[in-house]
Image 1 (cartoon, rainbow, N blue to C red):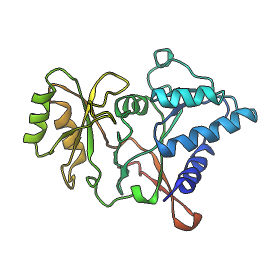
Image 2 (cartoon, rainbow, N blue to C red):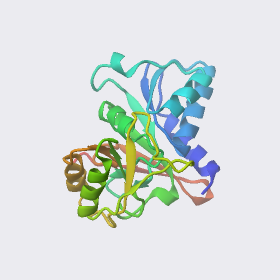
Image 3 (cartoon, rainbow, N blue to C red):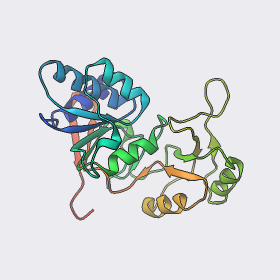
Length: 231
């Protein structure tokens, strides 16, 4: 699906934004459209503050006149709503994120959000996670050893490269290993295992964090998946 579906999903999610909210601004091609819609509503009088998950989202938000606040000025759990994208979402609303390289900041923002709403097109909905390579953010120091440990776990890691062939560097100065574990049967267990590896900063599994996934379907319809309280 193209930008039209992504735009529809983003605009649908922004209907949840209300005056006085502190909003987390996601990163990626679908979150872009949500930020654009928030900017439009701000120009029409919506009064919010926001915190971005990446330098790219920060620059876009500033260009649209959205008032930003430093993350360190926010109380723990003080973000009312975060709208973000995902590379995959399963039926339990577990996610793979990080294709855009902002997974660490995205997870920090999500962890301090009362509500995390994901926007996506239909290609991102999967029965089981694992078709999309799982991004794992690692520190540059000892990265070869960290990659070997990821390989021992069956991740078949590949160091992400920039367009110039050098290691891709995140906004936090780290590298990303894109791992292919195949079908991920237990996302929670893998998330924990990965984060116990020295050298791993964070990984792109977002387990039990999303409240809702808004999916733009073929033909212009919107599908909304909501996580049950028991999940």
